[in-house]
Image (cartoon, rainbow, N blue to C red; front, side):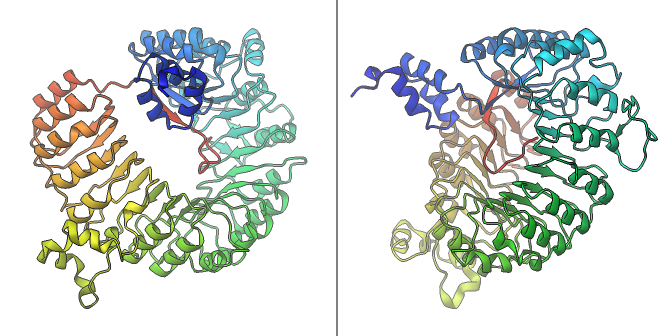
Length: 620
């Protein structure tokens, strides 16, 4: 059946299964597909990034026809262009907006209030880093403005106030008072005072000079029945303050982020687990005073936990995971930079089918004690569920690990192996090194170039362990600084049609052959990093550019043989490019760069991406 005869609704349904980049490409087929694609792009979990430039004005009108609901405005200030963008968003997008991000903007109070009042359906508002709004202390100070803001924010459920230097009790109370349904709040990196009590028994918590824990506690007591997620990362919250917080009557948190709260003790985490047993996401990354006792308390008290981040806990050892079998609902576990963790206890739990959690995301980044045996056991045990695996800088793992991953984890979508310097071409190819010369695998390849000829490669596939090419669902792959890798493996196994992000930086032996093979085998690439690959030349980019039509971000810094011819090829073929890094490319002149910018201006433009992924349960 010809596709043009299909009803638009059927095509829309089919396109809904594609990633957003593929839908954009599909919209170019014909008019019917274009309208079907526009309809399928109307999704609540697609965030549109709109910079404050004159070029964005026309795009805003186009977005209005899609009735987009999630928008991030960047580079806003007090300029005329910013005011025009705010006016356009207010007029065309405001009535339908559910999520608005103004992170780091320097817009004026007048512009902010104007924009806010034009968005009556907001459920999420991000004001992180918007210090100019709170500097004067007069935001929402007029009674009529407060009344209007209450009507606009009546449906607001998520509020991000992270990193606000000038946030005070007064401005906090004004803003949160306009949002009666607030369920998620971030005060990360705000200057909360925990020890000093400025009120001395008074119940009028409206200081314009500081943001106090006493006022936050009052807020939590008032909103205990509705608040479900709280982020206090980077604050100096103490153990006594944590005791008061978790014991607020009626408070039933689901998600709590406490990154880099260095004053928290094991006892405080024990109290947290006792009084907030319904938590499903907990992030204790960088809480340097915590040890095995805290991890054991989490396992014993938080049976509903789905996401647990314990990164950068230098006192944590494998003993802390003796009770991890109790976390049957756990889907995400982050143990990055836990230098005393080898994964041995996790291996024991995962080896028993009736005990192991259905982990979808696992990070052992920078865990130097991790060994091949643990990776092999985990790969076998977690095969049905694991989708994201980060082994960056696990310097002890070898080809055994990569072959285990390729053999047992075919459903992986993200694999990070940066700085795993013992990986060689043999590992990626899934070919066992000759036994008597196993320790000299790379030298053998160099001495006998026929060892990886097409016939030898095809013959080896009949008896090899799976090669990296078996990971056909990969969307992100990081092989940065795996310095023993060469063209011999990259040209044969990096043929991954779904791949969107790839890093091959700091691989000094790669040549144009790898670049061309990657371009032809991974035509969905949107981000490519090949910095400090000194053997790349203009010839490679001239040949590869036509296969990189979807490329948006390219990093080729430190590639000393490249000249302006590379820029000409990129500007001609890679028309979707948003950023390009050619620093330390001494062969590329400033004149060539200026010509490139004239031919393909890398100005920020409206971009879209999915938000609310399963491996990021708390995104305040």
